[in-house]
Image 1 (cartoon, rainbow, N blue to C red):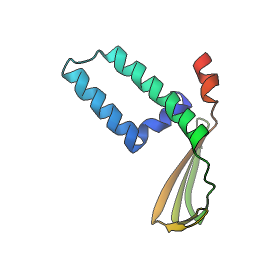
Image 2 (cartoon, one colour):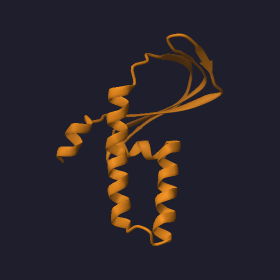
Image 3 (spheres, helix red, strand yellow):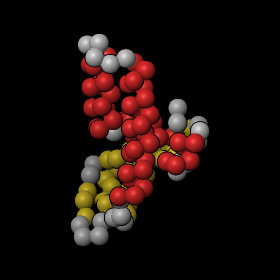
Image 4 (cartoon, helix red, strand yellow):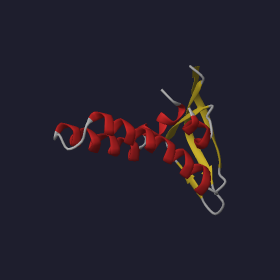
Amino acid sequence: MTQYELYRRSSVGIALTDTLDEMISSSLIDPQLAMKIMRQFDLSMAEALQKNVRCKAGFKGHLDTYRFCDDVWTFLVVNPSFRFESETIVANKIKVVACAGKRATDAEKE
């Protein structure tokens, strides 16, 4: 699993996966094409986030649980408060998954 495959667990990634699964089941595309599409999705998400996201944010809350496994940190934060440039948003709990990554251009070379 590459680091970028974390984007597949987002709502956009899940929707793409479900759509590709339906297309494979309907014999509209081959599984090999679906895998190529998912690899391109991984790279495109990383590149888009790197180039297009410019908003700085900070958050604080109560760290409930943390774990480090296979070079991936997972934090469960209760009652987080997010501060963006012009607004504050609160939630009941969040899950933060962080891992060391490569730049999208470096991953393409592999």
